[in-house]
Structures are given as structure tokens and as C-alpha cells.
Image 1 (cartoon, rainbow, N blue to C red):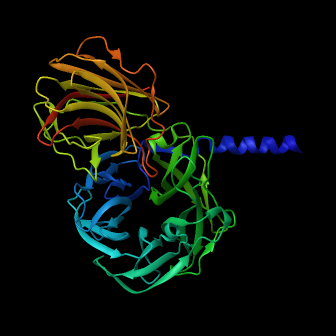
Image 2 (tube, rainbow, N blue to C red):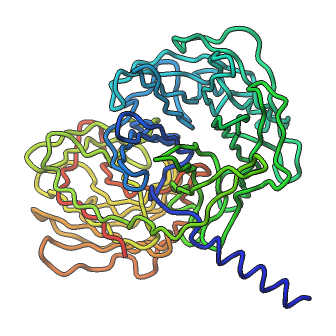
Image 3 (tube, rainbow, N blue to C red):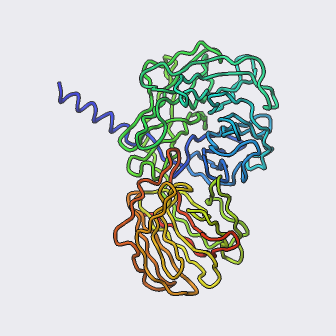
Length: 493
């Protein structure tokens, strides 16, 4: 009997191995998707990175390209935690429902709109702000055509249950009307202290709600996905006895918080999960899985053998009129930069991290390099692996030295250093293994590079709880100083 059970488990794992197709590499948590014309448009959480909420386009749900962002500066009412955008389209108008932290308040739901998916977007401000916080908005019409917003009350943040609410919304999406009604809450053991990330689809007699339960984020996450159904939007809602229907497999862990989408008569779910190999270092990545409706009125996922999209290398010569869409900066420390004549000029900041621009990592093993104009730069220049403003590991050229500096919880520690001479062109290189073992190299353009730190720096402390790492370009010094960068490359192994 024991041998038989082992065989069954092996077969199940084998079926699940390729069930989840990676389509958005790197940090794309809480993805949402909608079809507009002949293309699909998606967005995802950016948390404390700006610009906020990428606008991604695809023809096939698999190959995505970033076309811009919803916000290049925060809306006037919000300051950080730009989470869970839901992109929708109706009557020629694009709406982005999103959550963010209100200044001097808590998490609120808000709406922005545009006449075309690439924007520009007009923000309409908050529509729901509960004391415990309100997140994860999803619009849905009821059986009579009335427009509702579905959301989660963030009770788990104050050690309370997490109701999923529905309330009618006006057609301009600027205000809620009537009274809110609870649809369901976390009441099953596997859901832990929360349910969240609800998205819906109507098929036949039923509304189907995809939802996530348990802990979303970090190396100890235990997120999973469940299904509930109801014949009317406001309930009663019935949870599937076989929940969770999407859980860890051999390659991916903590799957959840996504949106269903129809494509050519077939149905798919776009959601996030952590790669078990690269874990929190590449963050919650965008996955696609097909599903179908069962004869007994439920949903099952279809096991697939589709190949993952490859990790793409980056070559950036800064020759365009504007910085490419891959670069972001901290919401707490706006970056000032210009791009002229094939050079990036980044103004410095006298903060522990310095001013920085970052680009997402899409694999666990990679090499990044950049050239620095040593003649015309007036601030300390660095190449870094960035968690946030208080947590970085960087190689910085300053005062005749190149130093490997660990910034942990805001405290600096020099790990290693080499003397350098003043040159017209410096080159910094960073090699990362396993997402966290960081080796730095220094040299002149066209010359052999020297290793700065013989013992790799440990970057395991870097990832914030809700986002992944960035490769960063750093300028550290007085605000009137600058660093000039050229020829950035990131190559995945």
C-alpha cells in the first residue's frame, strides 16, 4: 500500500510540473489582464517603486512588452504601497482600480481612467478607505446589470478576519452607493488568517470567484488559490470542497492573486508565484494556466506543456530621448536624471543608499556591468543590488578607492576595497549567484577586471517582504553633484 501511494504522488507531481507557464519574468505580483481590441493589456503591483503600475501589452497572453506606466509620480492623495491594480475596459474607457496608502491614513481603494490603455490616466482618488485598510478591488456587474466593486477589508493587519465586500458603484466610477454586503471571509483552515485577491468570471448559471488565502509573501509564504461560486453576485457564495485548487508544485510555490481571461473560446488564469529556485530574489512572477468548467459546475485547471518565456538580457546605451521603461526608483527618494548623447546623468543624493535607478532581475544567476565617466562625474558612482533605501550591497568609486559597501537596516559596513586611479572611463561589474551571492569587479574600459571582494557578499537580507531585488545604478554625494553612466548590460546565465 505504501508503494502504491508513492507512485500516485509521483504521477501527480509529474502532471503538475509544467502546469504553470512563466510569461512575466521577475517582479510582477498581483497581475491583472483585459482584452482591448486585438491585444491584451496587463498591469501588476509595483509597491514602493516608481513609476507605478506597468502597462504591458501582448497579442497571445505569453509574450509581453511594457508600453509605459499608469503613474510616473504618485497621485496627490497617496504616498506608498501601490498594490494590486485591476485593469478593465468598458464602453471605450479603460479603468485602473488600485490600492495605495493614504497620506496620514491607511490603505484605500482608488480609480484612474484613460481613453486608451497606454494612457495618459486621470486619477479620480479614493472610493473606499476602511479603518483596517481596503485593498484588492475588482469590478463586476450583477445579474441585473448593476455595477459593483468587490474588495477585501484588510482585517488581518489588525488581527481580525478578512471579509470580502461588494458595494454598488456609480457608472463614472467615482463613488460607491448604497450599503456594502459581505460575500464571504476566511473560515477554512487552509485560508489561514486571510482571503484576498478576488477576481470573478460569469459562466452559465454561476459567478465564479478566484481568491487567494494564507500568507502571500516572503520565503515563508503559504499562499494558495481557491474557488467559490454563486448564482447571484451578492450570494449566497459556496466554496469548493476541493479547495485549494492551485497550490505548490515542483517548480513554483505560493500561487495566487490573478485574473481570469477568455482567449478564442478557451479560459486562462494569469496570476503570480515564486520560482522555488530563485525564490524571493526574483519575486512573485507572472504565470499563466488554462482552466475549464466542469460538468458539475466547478472549475479545474488544465495541465500544459508550454515552454516558459526566456530570461532576456539587457543592453542599454542610453541613446534614446527618454529612459527605457525597465528603470524605476524609490517612492521615498525620487531620482533626478537626464539622458543625452548616449549618456545617463544621475544626480546624487547624500543618503545612505545614494540616489539610484533600478531594473528588475529575471533569473538567479546574472552579470551586470556599467561604465562610468570618471572625468566628468562629480559624485561617488556605484553599481548595486538593491532591496530598498536602507538595504543595498554596492561597489562604489569614491576618494581614490572602489569599495564594496553593505547597507543593512540603514547602517553601512565596508566589506572590501581597492585603490583606483582617476581615469576617463571606469567599469564596474557585479556577478550574482543564487540570487544573493554578490561578487564585484573593477577595471578600465577594455582592460582585464580585478575582483574587489574575494569572498562574495551575502545579499540574503536584501529583499523586502513584498517585492524583489533590482540591479541599481548609484550616485552618492551632495545634491548638486552627478554621475555619468554609459553602456549598461545585464546578462543572465
